[in-house]
Image (cartoon, one colour):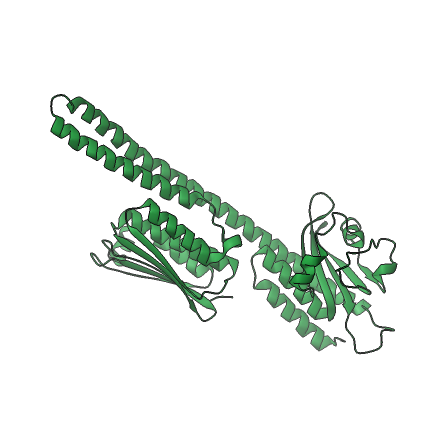
Length: 381
């Protein structure tokens, strides 16, 4: 495949747009690899991210099926010319990689590679990745086929922008980690305040009951019933806080399973009935799944701590390429405008920010004595 100036520019532009759509590091890596393979019309492409020990922390491939990749097995710590590029980060364009002295062979399930093009991805002087392409497709006989100087220059342009996209994704993930750390600090304060107050009341009530046992057994019995009630409330507070502090297993389980588990734990921890229903939701981009989970957690927190609800229902259903999350309770409700004016947002501003941050929207329906419904819509990838 030959790229003229116009077609090459269009292809690069398309690849850069694809990279800019993602914020998660893993998604960016996959997009870079797929874009590079399509841009240079290669059969195979890979991208390795170095670790601190001379090998690869991450290695993403395109053009190799899942079953074949599993059959190939784990990547060796030092992998011939691939690992060598992390130390000698210069472009490598070879007519046949198998004839290079650094070539170390491959497992039997590995595809047969011949022509090869490798290029570092740099952030200043640091090599933050290496792109590898092999087996250029062409319609001419094998003689004279292979990667050209133009291919190398085109891949160089892609690599420069890939460095920006990868750096931005890393910064985003770091920012998200800091946000999660801040949320955990807030939750820890809530845990301390809520449970400490309950335990203080519990101690005072127990002391009162002890003083009344001899002279007023009936009142002592009432106080002991209050002790039992306070202990139950303290247990609920503690369990709910621990659930929120526990990191969600979104990466492993996905949004539906994570939400279902979260709701089941809350149902056990609280006297209110908490239910969940999911309807045919496809996997969403990681940022959207996290935003939906955090909105659900905040809405559940409000319903269970402040509304006095007997039943809280969470639903998640598919809407086009995206999804709609709805948290409904039969609690005391409130006037959303009055709450806004008074500055008692109940996390509503945070929830709206989370929804808009991933291109979604949040609506709140509530009235005194009528319960509350919070709806978040996310558009999908």
